Length: 340
Image (cartoon, rainbow, N blue to C red; front, side, top):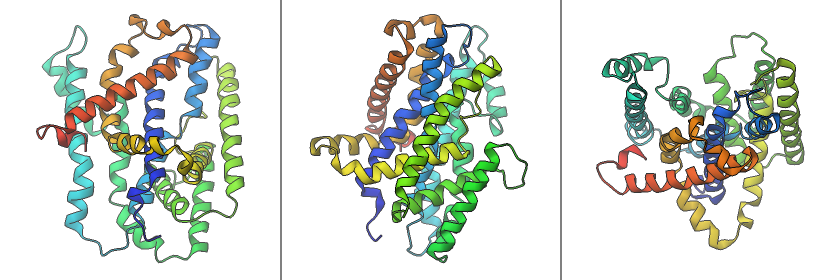
């Protein structure tokens, strides 16, 4: 594929969908722990939406694989570090400090000492819940140049063997079978290669990938309900980002967007492409908008009558507000670097 995927429309669609799905997961976050606290049908609405949205983070990683692994020009370390790595690391560090300030000074016992403690622990614990992603994502930038070299040396059949092995590893991880390969950098690197492969090849058995994704989604829905009833509480067994069910759903979403995004009405394409430009900024700042919403004492979810309505509506509202704030920050030279 000679054209750069950076300007392919379905990548924009994937970015927007993944951003919406991440926001939905964070919108429903406080509700999934309320088993036997709120009515079962209200609780199930949150848990089932959660079960269907877990492909969001893997899609972001697959997009990176699709965009970066296909670059075949000579590797320039300085350009790569300044244009790729630093562009993500600096905003991550800045937002870590911002969220540490929010966490340190929130509540009645907020203090500078608490802020410093949060910063001191940030080497192992993110300062806010959504920043965990960067602890696993940033190391992948140091793997990508090596993977790019490797996959362009391997033949098509060997790459398929590599992906097959990774799929088996995600199954092993899901079943909690111990192996030294069950480490994040290996499991998440597989998403990079998977994204590159789906972007550059049309799998012979595309239909089976879609069927597998639909079966995995159905398994998530039924399994999340059944496992929670069995445990008499919320179960995250079907929610893993590094498990076979999530891989199949993410592969299905990627494939469907690649095949059918061009059928989106022409007047909507510039809008989607525009929103996609701000997806990283939306990811970074949307939890600030969610702070008063996630406080159950404010009763925001109750305004909509039922969680099956509240979660999608709040997700869309937060997405729009996050986009507006991101665009505003990106328009000022002083803050543009915060939302690359």
